[in-house]
Amino acid sequence: MAADATYGLVIGGVESEAAETEALLDPSTNRPIARVAVGTPEDARQAMESAQAAFESSDWAGGDGTKRSRALLRLAHLLEEQQEEFARSETQNMGKTLRESRIDVGFVVRTLEYVAGLADKIQGETIPVPGSRFNYTVREPLGVTVHIAPWNYPLLLAMRSVAPALAAGNTVVLKPASLTPVTAVRLARLARAAGIPDGVLNVVPGPGGRLGAALLRDPRCRSVSFTGSGEVGRTVAALAAERLLPAMLELGGKSPVVVLPDADLDRAARGVAQGIFGNAGQMCWAGSRLIVHESVRTPLLDKLRGIAEAMRLGPGAEEGSEMGPLVSRGQERRVLEYVEVARADGGQIVTGGTKASRAELAEGNFVAPTVVADLPEGSRAAREEIFGPVLATFAFREVEDAVRLANQGPYGLFAAVWTRDLATAHTLARRLDAGMVVVNEPPLTFPQTPFGGFKESGLGSEQGSHVVEGYTRVKNVLVNVGLPKRKG
Image (cartoon, rainbow, N blue to C red; front, side, top):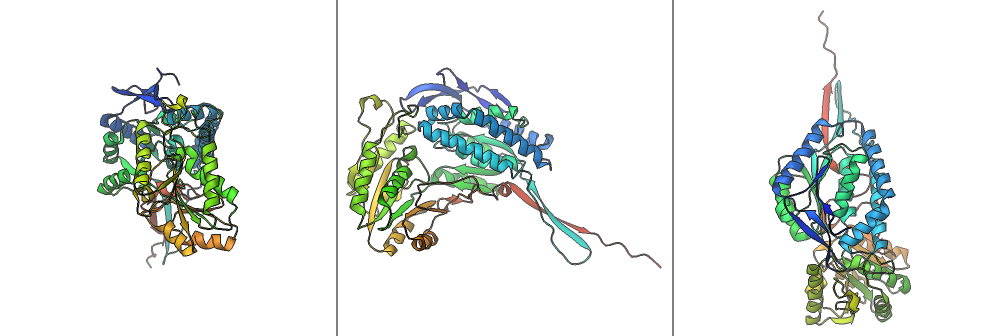
């Protein structure tokens, strides 16, 4: 990206400038890389108006899902052809490594392909009822759906909800995160070339505090999908409740990773490190609480310290980088403040806990991979989402203690178990209060597998074969087919 490049509003298939713009910064240097439009409530209104007009006048919402399927497949292919360019834009805008960005863009391609295959398979059913009657259901698109995306996986988490909404025949207004709007705007530019009618996919960058209420209170809004913090999620839920809007909320996590004494410690150490240091820990499903059996605590912590201290921090665009910067100065401050909370509460810093020490990284938002031991269970650093490369560790003696530790707290998004015993793995998977449990894996998901949280980690789930149905409404039709009796 060039520093003088501008990313505008995409409304009705046209990208336009806004009255106000702001600079986007490279998290590895905090230097400007581009400018982006700052949308206003009036821009939000125009986007909703455009989306409603497209819903009513184009054939996108019509009964032939094959057209939508083909357009989404073309969009997938166009994105795949530009995968490297999109990955580099994501890395420069958000900071993650190129390897991670390439994986993310590939996931978006696969998501588009997957939901394209569902677009022409949205079916109703016939229902037996008494008498000479025929009863059936049809699934109809909702209308205009609003999608508020986060900054940690800018394109992936936006398209995880946008793609199925489009496949179901809805029209969309997407509000990307203010810090990371680039790939959302770039994808909207591809939509027309893919054959998606103008107005079906609209993108309005800008602050959520300014745009969120305008989008959700607009009478044309028919549902909202939000991924982000619990605090903002509650605000979104309240706004949705005002109009009884369906809401899909994917919120925070403080995910436990349980390591049993029979685990392969080398594999477990690599998996635990990937689950907390990947994307610099800026993941809702980061495995941020290590719950390890006391018999293997010391060797596992030694392995994790070795991995953390050997990791190469650097700008995401450098091929040798293994962990990039945090997304902003504000996020860097937040993470380091939590480290100080951990220290004050008696936590022992096994490694890290500071800004990266290399002089060439001083201008960026780099925090060293951090492992904390002996942290009290009640510490804020043990219970609250840090959203950075900070691992809190706890030891247990009995499995019951591990389950108690894993299930305490308000979140229930993700959990991991490391063991060679399949019976124990299945038993723990049932007992862990999380929407997703992996065994002997770092955090891993696929477009065809459901993803959603329990407790305060959210409402509903994304992905999976039923995801498109969540963007439809069911209509029941009852027809009396009995013939009138003849007189005489």
